[in-house]
Image (cartoon, rainbow, N blue to C red; front, side):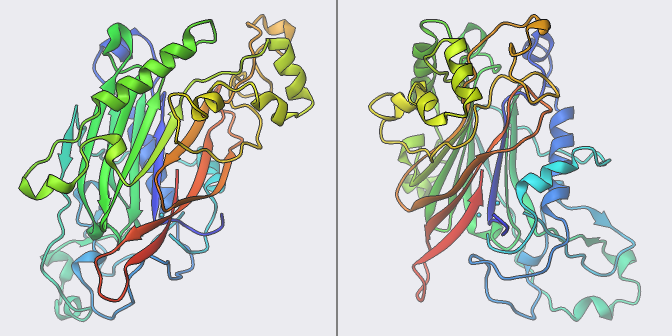
Length: 403
């Protein structure tokens, strides 16, 4: 997709290595901060300014929406007297680099930026939008504006939430002019790892209202393994996530806001779901060598769960890409292909998936990205969503977003 989206949802399942120190010790937020800085830098690259479907009509007046008022997403530049316009790439419509190009900048030096406050368990997050308005000519009236009030750099995309639980991390980025239409933002975490409660496995769910439509993004890392019984444990994880994820109402006005995952209008479930293929390793590798994805996908466990199983009623786009797991590091070869490596010969599988549920949501693309920095290959999907808007002239808006 060559156009930027209105909303970007980015999830990690092992943002830190999973070992005793990270699971039982103090949460290591360092790698997440680096990724957040990289994401912000990539999304806010300068691009040609074009109108998106969700963006309001242009106006000469500078309103509170034109400033990124969230301190964690705004850089104060006391030397600047002009608002700097930046931008990048998925829910929106403009020409810009694709997400795959954006991820090619992993080696670009970046500065550490302050991370969003870490929200534990279930959290309610308020978005502040100042009521004070000004005109574009007002800053010029100040002879030395940088001494009176530091100017905030403008970002086309701002982060509305970022949450980490051990290795799982999710962040949601939106167009700056869309942020004032996002409300009732809440986060809920479910730990399913060691002892059935620690965060090395589990989920982070984000609930939010976009205009009058409720969205829920569920980032998960389910039980691994391909032995008998592992699929049932993954199904049990899904049941636990659906039952234990809860978004409490904060006041009487929130009575109509959904409290559970399935109560939302539109739901995206993403992450390392860890479902495997029911095939011997040699048979699976034979089909991989022939690039016979159709035959191999018929043996996919999650496909069966979508058709009458734990994910009955959910949807997934057509898979036309190779299995995403398990690769040798810094290699295009699956683990076990090279007998000299001495690695366990396992069946390649589509462990990394993106599912959706709800009416008014259409998937435009579904693919994997060829990044060899992990034993997984990341997947990406682009959606367009119908969003209800309480407006006399317009009842629905089409929005693009990427996961």
